[in-house]
Image (tube, rainbow, N blue to C red; front, side):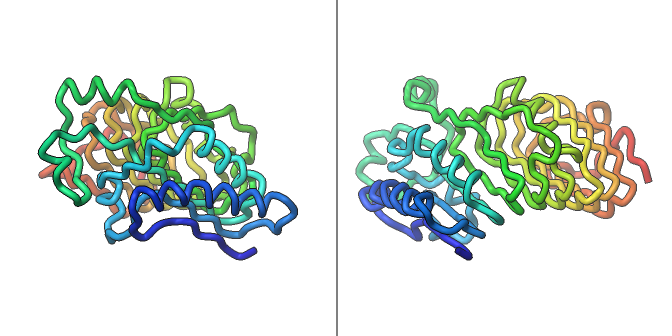
Length: 277
């Protein structure tokens, strides 16, 4: 099968909840004797906005109906049956609404939560999932609603065909953070060309020994990052955004083919400790 897209353009909460069951049903039929799928896109983030980064912060009240078991099943299905491009987008849990907001019947953009709201949100269910791994994937885009992600120890060539990786809105512990770096290394992702890491909590030291094929690296909103080391002989474009990092002392980059360095949060170009040219 060439492709399968399961995502709402804009639906109400009830329809979105129905879609969870529909996704499970469709994938179960394919897993029971159906053909492998070249492209699988599953999204529970409303697609009415052109800027999907904005869509992420719109209230998705059906997020609480998406459980760890659902996400795990979708990831495991992709491991078995997807032979090309895999996308999975899960919304973040909606923050508690104040009385005034409850009277407004339109999606509300997030604002910083107060201490009481944070405490209430912390008590709610948090997704716990394990990262999928497949030598058949050509691209993998995961936006997982701040799920706690466990990264397995990967063998050589775990993502042998993977060229494009986008990971967003996840949390990792120290061990999974280190294993994520290993997973994205040249021995595990020998064909990687594009890598985007965005809104990832728990990564303190990002050390990438990238394949020579890596051309584009985008890092954004990594709040715990204190050290960045990149060895990427083929890297041409590097973007570092919304990261509180001393680029003069905490960064080492070896990128002899680098052409574009973008740091939009800074008024002056940063001085990078080591850049091989």
